[in-house]
Image (tube, rainbow, N blue to C red; front, side):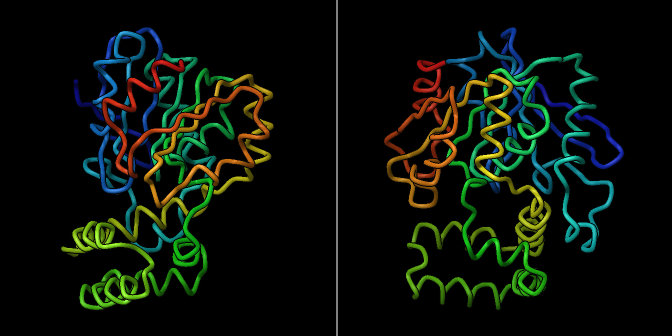
Length: 272
C-alpha cells in the first residue's frame, strides 16, 4: 500500500493505492474511517483490481482549501465532486473504472454514478446510506433551522452528551451505537468533523428510479451488500432501486453494520 495526495482547486485529496490488478476501483469509506478501511479486499481481489481508496472530506488527511463554517454549510454538489474525480482520473490516465462505497461513502458513489455511469464497469454499495438517510439526519443537515441546531449541539460537548443520553432513553439506538457516538464527540475536533462531514454532503441526494435509469442505460453491473444484523440500513431500503435495475446482484452477509472485512471480500468476489 502506498499513500498519495491529489491537488485540486477545491481540495488536497488524500488516498491510498493498493492491489496490482488491471481494473481500477475507486473506494469511498464510511463515517469516521479512512481510505485504509478497504485493505481487507486486497488479499482476495488485489490481483483483479488496483484500488484507489480516498480519505473522505473532513477525514484523516484530506483537506479542503476552504473549510470555514459557511463553506461547510453550503455543501458540495454532484457537479463539484465529479469535477474532482474527472481531474483525478485524467491525472492517473484512467478511462474506465469500478466504484465501491460503504455507508456514508455510498453518497459519493451515487454522485459519481449519476454523472459518470458510461465510464463505470461495476458499481458496488455496502449498507448504502444514500438510499434512506435517517430522518433526523436529513433534518439536521438539509433543513436550515435544523442545521443551525446541529452546529450548536455538536460544538458544545455537554449539550451533545445530553442529547445522546436522551436519545438512548427514547430507544432511538442501543448501547453499542451510543458508545460509538459518544467517542465521536469526545473532542472539539471530532465534533466539528461530525458536523462538517455530514453537512458537506447535504446536496448528494438522488432519486432511486432516476439513478436506476442512468445505470441501466450505461449497462453498469450493480451490487448491493447488506448485513443481516445491520439495524441502521436494512435490505428493505434497496427494494425500489433494485426492482428498477436490469443488472443487479444482492449479497447478504451475516454481519452487523461493521462489515468491511474478509467475509465481505470473499462473498463479493464470488459474485463478480
